[in-house]
Image (tube, rainbow, N blue to C red; front, side, top):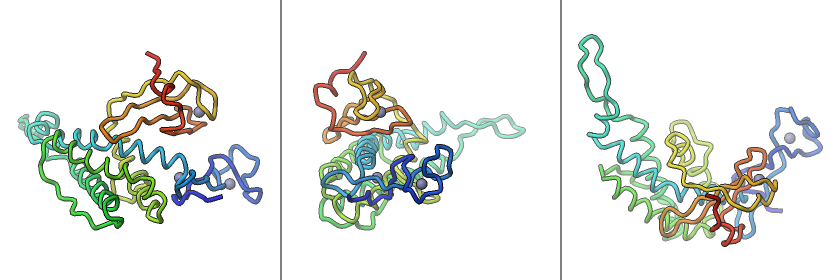
Length: 243
Ligand SMILES: [Zn+2]
Ligand SMILES: [Zn+2]
Ligand SMILES: [Zn+2]
């Protein structure tokens, strides 16, 4: 068995030597490594998470670009000045600027990988672009990465991509997953008609592709289950949503 290079474990499953073997309430959340998906060095959960996060990031960057526009910032972040009662725009929120820079760096670095097989130090420049341009630029980068995802994930660099996209985030760094948790996108997912392949409950949500080059992303909403995939449900099932 090849273990996931991101160090994932099978939740709730323990080796016999683990003090929490056979217990439900122990400190260890699982110590048996998760198996890598066929043909790549990351597990199914990482694979699905990478595809979903890379599919979401262009829209997220458009949202952040909108928040960085001075007018929007003045509109949204008005603060009362103590004593005077005057209204002044707050400075642009540092977390929006930091997250934009980190997400752009991640996209740029891994798009380089997709093009010529090495991670380069990205510039991470922050031109003050419109939301439309931010989205378009991010879509180009994300589509390049998604197009080569199998090759990236079958290299020793796969762990680096998982770290940058999924986390856990180093202090002060915005992974894509952390930014999506902070600024959730409009939920366009629908409930799938078919039950989850793992837990057999009708708890699978299906998110349609967000741009050309993005994929349909499915995941089970049951927190005990954690099934996530984007291509193991049959296409006719993915296409059949409950209203
Ligand atoms: Zn354990
Ligand atoms: Zn994994
Ligand atoms: Zn499930």
